[in-house]
Picture 1 (cartoon, rainbow, N blue to C red):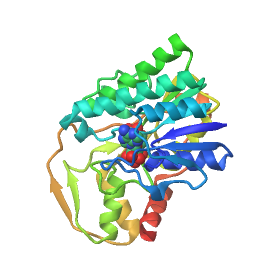
Picture 2 (picture 1 turned 180 degrees about the vertical axis):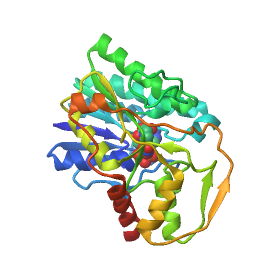
Picture 3 (picture 1 turned 60 degrees about the vertical axis):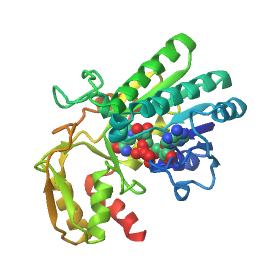
Length: 307
Ligand SMILES: NC(=O)c1ccc[n+]([C@@H]2O[C@H](COP(=O)([O-])OP(=O)(O)OC[C@H]3O[C@@H](n4cnc5c(N)ncnc54)[C@H](O)[C@@H]3O)[C@@H](O)[C@H]2O)c1
C-alpha cells in the first residue's frame, strides 16, 4: 500500500519507514529536517521518496491530496518538553496545527487511516502504577497537552468524518539513530559519552525509573497498525521500569569502560517512576516486545561504535 510517514527522517520515524519498505509498501517521507529535531538525511531509506516539507505547509497538504496515500503515519512533531515550556506557541503550531493540516489533507485524499505517535507524557505524574490506557491523563507540559489534544482530534475526525486512526502512547524509546545531543534519550546520551570517555551527569538520585522500549519493537507495532487496531489507543512500552543508575551500569558493562559520574539536582518536571501495563496491545494487536534491554543496549552501542 502507499504510505506517507511524516518525521520519517527522524529517529523513530526512520525505523518505521524501514519496516514499511521491507514489508513491500510504497513509502513517501515528509520531513522538514528541523534543526532542533533528530532528523537527518543519513536516516533516510533510499527506497522511500523524500520531500523536505513542513507539516504545517500548504505544499504538504497538496502533496497528500495528489498522492492519495492509503495510510498516513504521523511521527513529525515538536518533541521536546523543554522547548514546549519555553515556546508553547511553537509547540502548538507544530503539534496541533500541523496535525490538523495533515488530517484535513488526508480526508481530502480519501486516506483510510492515520497512525499517530502519542506519548506517556500525556499522563503527567502517575497516580497508580503500572499505567494503562484508562489511567487519568494530566499532562504537566505543553508537549504533553498537545499530544493529548491530538488524541481527541483523532477521535473527532473518526466519529464525525470517518477517518480511522491508531495512536500509540510511547514509553521511552531508545535505539540506533537516536539523537545523543537532545535533552531526552538518556541511553543515547550516556552511550555516546561513555564511548567518548567523557563524564556522565546523573540527575536526582538516579533511582528514578522509566519504561524503555527498543525502537525495532516500535516499528513492528506501527507495521501491525497498518491493518489492525482501528480507532484504538495503545500504551506501547516494555512493561518494566529501569533506573538511570542501572542503565549507566549496564552501558558501562556493555562498552567495557568506566567514566566519572557527576550528580546533579532533579530537573523540573522530572517524574520519579513510570511504567506501563501493555496488555491491551498484546491482546488486540498480538504485539509484545521482542528485544530485551540487554540486546537493545548492545545494538545501540554497536551503532555508535560504527559512527
Ligand atoms: N523518542 C521517544 O522516546 C518518544 C516518546 C514518545 C513519543 N515520541 C514521539 O515520536 C515521534 C518521533 O520522535 P523522535 O524521538 O523520533 O524524534 P525526532 O526528532 O528524531 O523525529 C521527529 C522528526 O520530525 C521532524 N519534524 C519536526 N518538526 C517538523 C515539521 N514542522 N514539519 C515536518 N517535519 C518536522 C524532524 O525533522 C524529525 O525528523 C514524535 O512525534 C515524538 O513526540 C517519541
